[in-house]
Image (cartoon, rainbow, N blue to C red; front, side, top):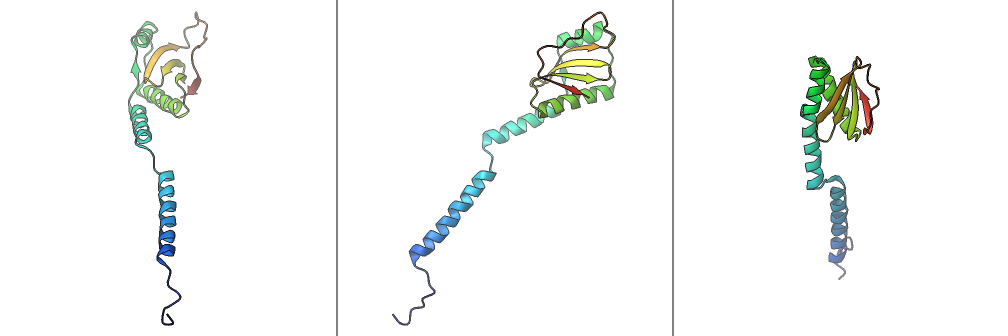
Amino acid sequence: MNGINKNFLSIDQIQNTYLKDAVAVTKEIEKQTASFAEILDIASSKNKEAEPLRFSKHATARLMDRNIEMTTDQINRLNQGKIEASEKGIKESLILVDQLAFIVNVKNNTVVTAMNNDDTDETKVFTNIDGAVIA
């Protein structure tokens, strides 16, 4: 036994060392890894953000009734406002673009109604919204 090097570790010591490291690495990977459902949710929300807004029949009728014509810049700003509302967790948003006001269902990516500042006959009260964006 005098010829045995005392710097060697026993099998138990080696196993414990490597197993502890493996458990630590596994826990670190679990912290950094998203579940499939989380990844799918993120991907679908990003895709919805990229989709252009749809206009409901009601909103389309309001645009026509009120002679509201939108420029490409205004449409782009309305879309950007919807993206910002989505990022803040707003579900039903009032989005103001110049002198135009839009109620947007953010989750469904749909403009629900529209009005302009010329609608002086109507009281400007907005209900059932949980946030507003000035775009």
